[in-house]
Image 1 (tube, rainbow, N blue to C red):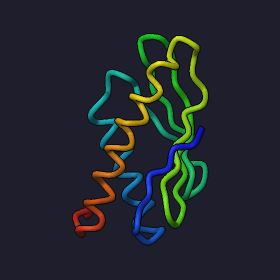
Image 2: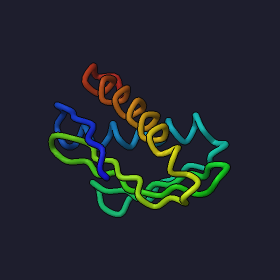
Image 3: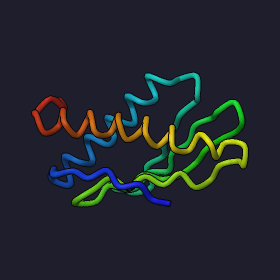
Length: 105
């Protein structure tokens, strides 16, 4: 299941905002051991650990949206998927707004 977070930024600015959002997420929630590994300039594997197991997925930046898919998670963690998506979405939206306002650098 892919979740779309729409944006109206250039692809380069959307990439920078998404990277900043993931870095801010890692700083805000170290207790969940969040991480990311950028496979291409537009796609990263992401993960974090909950009390019931590790959740993994991918985030992809395209010209109109940031796509988030959290599709590798233990059965017991499935109830947390929506909460995780909401938290990541809020962070990405905040950084998209900062990028729009020229506040990235």
